[in-house]
Image (cartoon, rainbow, N blue to C red; front, side, top):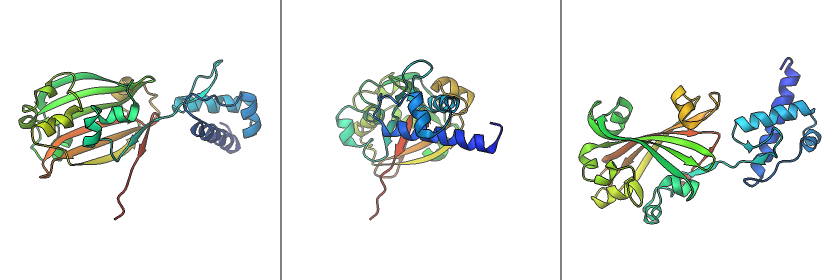
Length: 247
């Protein structure tokens, strides 16, 4: 963009396309190029550029000769998604967010030394033996998040299912509950940044697109840490929703 006016016009057009897509149901068709030109009061090349950026941002599908449709992100709710009621339905947090057609690919399950960020959260020395579970989560549209869990070995060895590719109905937290360590509270530390090279490959994401990095720590009723998990989510495919207690 050679001028400030051109930059403003293209930015405004992109904002208009993103706003339109957000207002539509998943899979609903956006207006035609001609209609977008009229609504946004910009030439066709600006509409074409705005749609291309919206595709890179994950807000729309198609284009380039195909119909352009809205693409709704996975809604990741902060409240309720990890509760016992959800686990009783044999769902983990991701399936309650993304639906029954979502899949989890487990890449690694092993015991190994705990890295410093996880050790701090688990209140154990760096290098302590932990169970490490590394996996990628996918919807029908492709990968949306990757996660690596760290569980103290004394707890993990009480739950043999954690050493397999699947952790059984209700997931890891249901297994903790079965051995008397029901999770009662979790904290999450969230930041946004551009992805690393490994994250670009694993999440099949544009290197300029942002990701959310979430460190979750799960505690039992005695405030003992049960798990520290590092989650990297595609910010263009996931929306975070929080419920805040006010009393």
